[in-house]
Length: 66
Image (tube, rainbow, N blue to C red; front, top):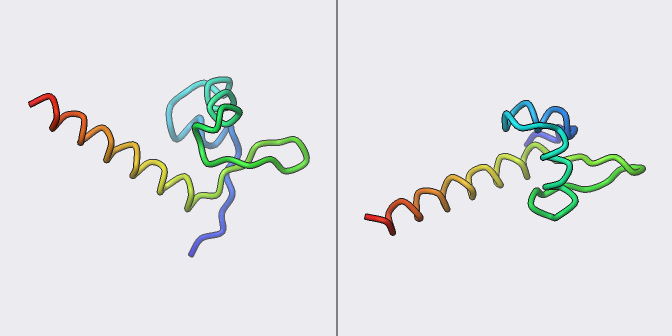
């Protein structure tokens, strides 16, 4: 199991989003993020699980439209 921890900047690059957008998502609880001394961090394993969940919801939405 990887214990890698990502920064907002790293997550923004992975999601191809602006850092401000990812920061806002973290603040709103839309990402599985936590703060360390006032700075947002995301465990890589939590991020990967979140990505899978997002993809699953997208697939389910597409199936419902058919």
